[in-house]
Length: 150
Ligand code: IDP
Ligand code: MG
Image (cartoon, protein in one colour):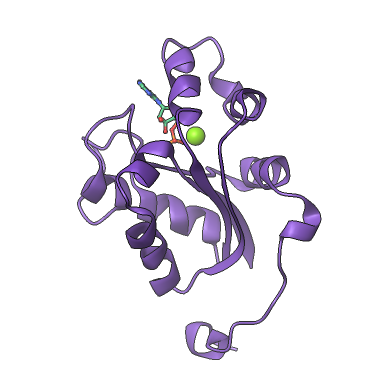
């Protein structure tokens, strides 16, 4: 099992898309192991997007992500990192496939409603940046034997 960090960005919250987005993850069989609704402090935003520092969209990106509350979560499942990235779709909603979250709910690269970790290293880093160890809940889902071959 693998864990990944996912965040519904301020535009996703403002557009009341939280329920629809989470429904997709739940229905796919992914398990929620942590969740938190928060206003992102500047420092956290800067750490989260540290790799983009210096790029022309960086300042706008920090303003965007701190512009209103976000829903941060950790999802767990088989191959969860890649699975969630596929469900989220390409960074630019003009290029994301229909059927993906960005493809279905977004129009513009600067307002693409959701974040998801892009690899094992970033997932590990982002989960520990956004959540304390004791905020990650270990538990069994009763339908796991129907989701996975066990
Ligand atoms: P990702 O979110 O799909 O991993 P990244 O390339 O890591 O995409 O970029 C992080 C975020 O920065 C994007 O989700 C988007 O919000 C923003 N971003 C990336 N490229 C641009 C751009 O060219 N203009 C405006 N915002 C951008
Ligand atoms: Mg990224």
